[in-house]
Amino acid sequence: MIPVAAAIIYNSEGKVLIARRREGKSQAGLWEFPGGKIEEGEDACACLRRELREEMGIDIMPYAYFGVNEHRYGKSLIIRLIAWKAEYWGGEIVLTDHDDCRWEHPGELDRFHFAPADLPFVRKLGLEPGGR
Ligand SMILES: Nc1nc2c([nH]c(=O)n2[C@H]2C[C@H](O)[C@@H](COP(=O)(O)OP(=O)(O)OP(=O)(O)O)O2)c(=O)[nH]1
Image (cartoon, helix red, strand yellow):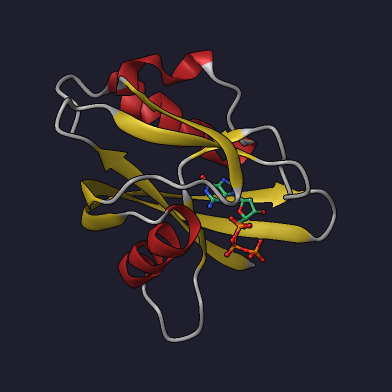
């Protein structure tokens, strides 16, 4: 089982950042909450701060655990996807692992084709009254 962390990053307008996995990555063409594999000795928050700096060049601060979902991709890959809400601190987004990204209202994410492991989070965000 591979532990992966995903950040639901809010900007000052209450929109969240979603990104589309680029060609060549697993789950290419699907939308996700940015993040990545948790490394040895890291917790989900440290992983997210590192990944967002590496992958997008931005600073974030995770502030609330959101949920976990285990998902099997194919025969041999099971991921344990741990989601945290995070605040956008700054930096201009530069895409490396993604070919598109957008800030969207959390209630409108069902218009996007997300990686299957993310669907419980998309649903839960859609049900939250105030967001954030
Ligand atoms: N980051 C991220 N990965 C997700 C999400 N949903 C989902 O199914 N995944 C899957 C896709 C990949 O199989 C795995 C994470 O791999 P990754 O490619 O993002 O992680 P990474 O950058 O650390 O790894 P690598 O490609 O450099 O080896 O989890 C999500 O919302 N965010």
